Structures are given as structure tokens and as C-alpha cells.
Image (cartoon, rainbow, N blue to C red):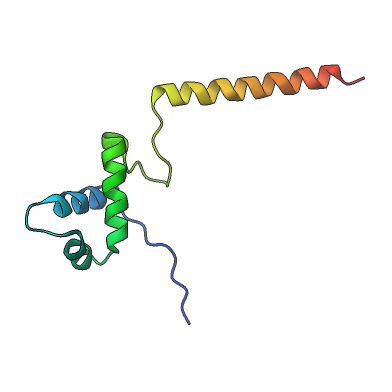
Length: 92
């Protein structure tokens, strides 16, 4: 009995799969069958590319952050650190 891990696809493979599935005369199901992936996966990739365009498929399983999102995360971390310092100083 062999245990298979999750298969990983590089961003270029995903973009090509999306482009193929959007060509006239091709169906998502046929493209998925030819590539050896599930059609639901191609639909998900299409949705990610529609929502995030150039930021889609950054790799490592994490969506690329915009500058605003990076700034928000940094400010949230700074706030958390400041609150912890305040709580330490409050203790008798």
C-alpha cells in the first residue's frame, strides 16, 4: 500500500492549463483529462487567476500580498508587541 502525497504544480503549468481551458473549442473536462488533473482543480485555478491576475500562483501555498496587506500585517504585529509590553508593565 503506497501513500501518495499532494501533487504540486508550478505556476507556469497552472497558467497554461487555464489558458488552454479558455480556448474556443476546448472544454475544461477535456483539458483536465489531457493534463491528468481534476476538472475542479482547473476551475479553482481559473477563479484564482480571475481574482488575483498577476498575483495568482505565487508558490509555497500562500497568496502574494499587496503592499497594503503587507503594511497591515506589520502594523498588526507592532500593535500586538506593544500590547504585550503594556501588559508586562501592568503586572505587579
